Image (tube, rainbow, N blue to C red; front, side, top):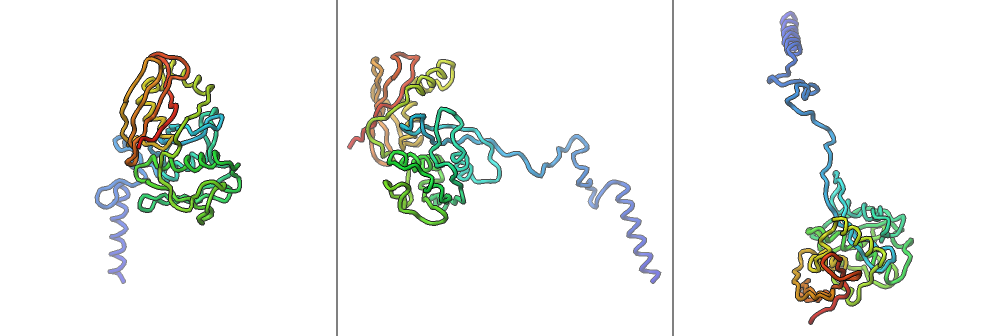
Length: 279
C-alpha cells in the first residue's frame, strides 16, 4: 500500500513540474497558447474559402437569348458543381438580366459520376416553369452550359425529386444526359439597350475584348454552345463592320458572322449576328 502511494505521489510531482513549466510531454506548448508568441499564426477552425471565378448563363432583359455572366464567389466545402447551381438559382447579379431557372426551385443534390452531372431539382423546376419553347431551351441550356464550363463535366442528367422526367415544358426531351451542343443555328437576336450599356462599359475602359471580333466569337459564342476549348480562326474583317470567324466544335465546322451594331470603327463593339453550319 505504501509503495502504491509513493508511485502516485511521484506521478503527481512530475505532472506538476510539467504544468509549472508550461510544457506538455515532448516539450510542446499547450494548444491554447500556440499563436501567443507572435511567430506562430493562430489556427482557425474554419479557414476562409478560396475565391473562384464561375460563368453562369442567364437571359437578357428581353428574353431573346442567353448571356454569359462571370462572377467571383467564395468556395467553401461544397463542390464547384453545387456552387455553380446555387448561384444560378439565386439569379443574375446584373439587374438588367433575367433569371433562367424558375423561381422557387431548390437544388436537392448534384453528383458527378464519370463526367455526367446528375442534377436533382425540386418539383418547382417543372411546376413553376412559365412554358414556351424558347423559355424551355433557355432553362435547359443555362444549366447545361453553366456546368459544362467545368472541364470535368461533359453532360448533364436532369432529375426532379430524384426521378427522370420526359420533358420540362413539352418541347425538349431531358430523359437522357445532355451535352453542350451548338443547336441554335441562324440569326442571333440582341437587346439594343443592353448593347448601348455594353458600349458604355467599353468606353470606360472595361471589357475591351469586345473590340476584337475573334475574341467576341470565342467568349460570347459560349452562350450558343461553343466552348473556350474549341478552335477559332478569323477568316475576314471588313471596314463595313462585318467579320467571319470559323469555329470547330465536336468535329463540326461553323461560320460565326459578326457585325458592329452601333457604329463602325476601331472603338465600337462587335456582336454575333448569325451562325451557319458548314458541311
